[in-house]
Image (tube, rainbow, N blue to C red; front, top):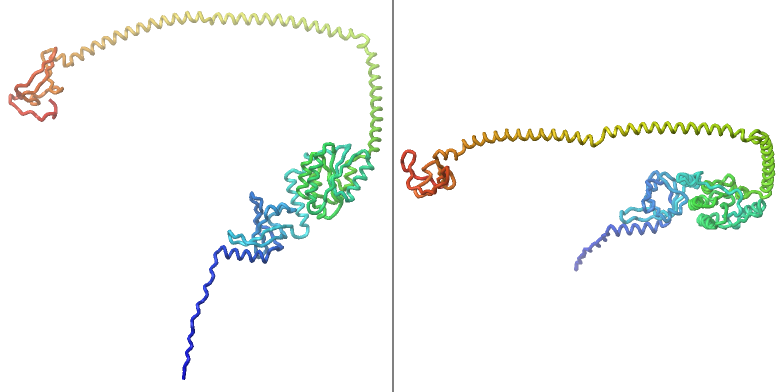
Length: 471
């Protein structure tokens, strides 16, 4: 009987793949971007910051979570409002991963306020910001000319607004020229076309005024006139600008920046161009009134002139002049007398000044100073002589005292000074036979050699080592 034995071979387990941090982050990024390449997200803006790059960074949150968002300046420039912290918004974008920190975030491509009145909120924010910059200031508004002869119109070339403006201007004053610059008034690129048209119209030198506007519509339809580009173009215009957007109840940013706001395009034409016939009638009325006023004034002056001619002044003018001539003579005499008195007074003052100068003459002072100098010189000589005599006596006394104390005075009495090696010798035991010594006398000196040394007791003593103690 054959027995079989089963042998089990142990299989090796596969080695797990090891990822780097960058690989994991890259894979997660690819998955997220594939799954969320275009999403709409609603939430509240928080921690908004805009650095020098002009990119906007913020956090979008709700009551349970939050996500970081980036709005690059290219997309930010196309927004219709300026977002702020606390705004409820609806944004469109894509989810990605910022690999440097391993954080997922939303790249925002479009942003708009959320809820009812969103555009109205954007309008109010834009209005507040431009008003703070001073674009609405009354002192910046230019005066609309009373009698324009060439009017520029910026509006749609096919709308009812341009037809109404042309018809009204033609009816009110057919001599006024109108230059129309057709533009888009709503939709993509409308704001850019309107702003560019305002700049181009300002280059035409003979234009007197601009009308910028369009017919009525919803707030979305009128939004091009709420764009910042249009507001700044109106503000920079050198020509007066009349804003005529929508109906009477419609207000746009352009209305606040413009030099004059018209409730409708038709009303703008009526406000800018006066009726020619009415103007002519008014001028004729004013001319007649002026003629009447002038005639009345002439008659009044004629009567006044006749009354003046009848007065004494015109009949006998010399009677009026004579009192003034007499008054003139009197004043002339008073002036001459006053001048004489003034001359006498000035002479007296001058004489006094001369006497003062004589009294203060430098020559007199110099003589006095010379006398004082002689006295001082005499006193100085006396003091010097007295001092010399006193010091001479002191010197003689000091010399006598010095001489009495001088060793030379002792030598004069027969004494001498013995020097050994440049020092005075005071002990006999400091030298030994054969040493040379110098003996100083009152007059002259002797060079001697020691033959024998005897101490004070008559005993020969050994000499001390050379160089120790005194001699």
